[in-house]
Image 1 (cartoon, rainbow, N blue to C red):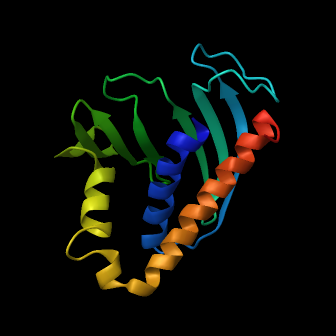
Image 2: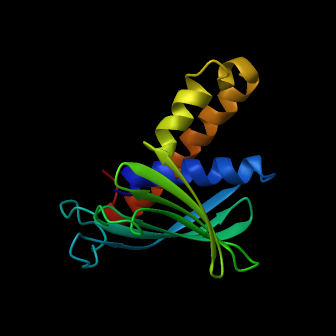
Length: 167
């Protein structure tokens, strides 16, 4: 689960921060891992399936807590990302039914945008496979993007092995 969900979450976070002026720095540690019933997974356990994990660290010098939950359920408000900004606003990306919903929450004021399908699939279709793909717009950036994905997988594999042990 750390590798399954974590790779998508890290890719979205890092690319967002990078395009807002951040760098490639990433440091993460595993705070906890639990099974689908919420019980702690002991170190070196190779059989219990992960249900949730709490990762902590920094991306581009920005402190963050990532809480991954594989069994959050289909109801809105349980799957997605929430970015808490210093000024008190919240940027929420959530999966609700067949739509991805993006919200900017500023106290009681909520701006909301919905898109049918997943933002992840749209990004792939438009940025990687589309007519104005990264390959066309900025071919030298393709290798850097690939390196960032490899760094994320390596980081998550390291966390996975810290929990499960070398295997």
